[in-house]
Length: 377
Image (cartoon, rainbow, N blue to C red):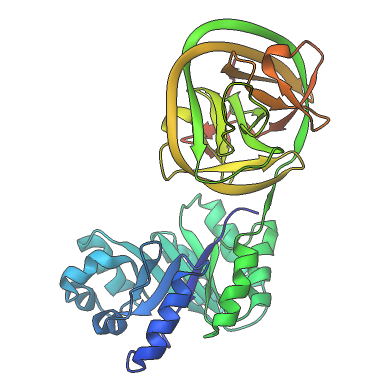
């Protein structure tokens, strides 16, 4: 499951309860909630000190309310409103994300939600009835119109959130938790940060050849990896090999359990949400997927990138008949994961060896999967 957006609705919080507000703000800032929803009056009252990682979304009734925020506008990630005329005025006159809030009570409001919502960065739907059919229809219409709008459903319980994430095998892009319960917020962490699963398959080595000097990147993550973990690296968008972390014996230096000697700078690496990044694009703060030999994956942040000229090896092979190749540094201490979940030094590979790799649907534009005819060789 791709990472989902979690907004926490704090419009119920009263600034008058100063001690409670401070306590809640601290708990929320340490939770999995990435975005907090408040109304414009709360921002003016000073509710909104949630730490740097938390985005603030402000509900407004009129465009003038946002204009009156003055310097506080810089703290706002997005504005939302159920008044489209006022919302459009803000979007047209200010450099801020906007979200249309729609209470779906009938067919007309359902159609309005997607027809108008696709013109904004966010569309928030709150349904009167418990049936999931309206959500399915909104999901289908947004996909049909190839809109990049983020669809969020208002939910009041963990059960509602789970269902919202599973509808049509895709679910809404996220939820707004409106329970007023911090216990519910802590339970959401298990859903939002659920381990991803990567299907690893046998890579049959066809050839290994020295291709000369080139630029290769080491990915130093801000995380400790195990001996069974690494990063998926490939020269084409159709797939790659599981390249191991530096957690295995090195005769002349200390281990680097945060590092993967990842390969040529042109290479794709698997990133969260079914995306890829070129090694050359990675820098401190970006995210990649750390993948285990059993197929589980977790998101880890990049701490730094180290790019140097080194001799390179080209490893060619196939996964279920699909041609895959990966270019790695020609050095004994660079390891890949064998299909038997035992590490192999790349300088000792030979034709017929079985490694672990990953097939991806080819066709990528700026790292995002697209449907197109593409040939890479």
